[in-house]
Length: 207
Image (cartoon, rainbow, N blue to C red; front, side):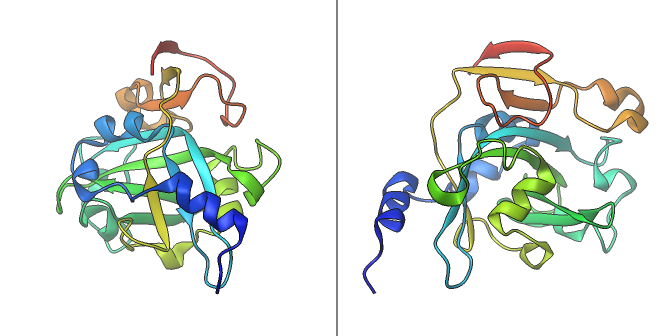
């Protein structure tokens, strides 16, 4: 089968997936480096769906009261303890499936939540179509069947992309319950993106 123009352009845009070594670091190191990366999903029998990552949050292990691993390893959180470069997908509020990237070597439960992406090409015309963690999984076709899958090869991969010109760093969203961790500056977003989930606030740093 001859690929259509869309698939050819996407293949040219993406290049090779990010390697395991990229993810084998602390989540607060990986998170800002994911801004600008392309998140690609290849549903069976469909054209690739791609979004540029514009907002992320870091969760830094068992000491982080906002992290699922805070109370240790459970059946639900087992994926968090897996190899670097693994997808961690879970359900919240009984309706939203959220996509995370597992970081650090196996056994160290760090992860980066991808909160928003800008759709690329015909994935979606509205730049705000994926401006939230539940919206982006619906648009790209990510669900719990992808939990525990490797991000080093399809169907879900991440690829180097353009570094944002300006980055904003703020506390994470919805973690008021986590004590001192509620104010930890572990949310990062592209200051110039229309797809960010919350209004600009916090400090702006160079990208």
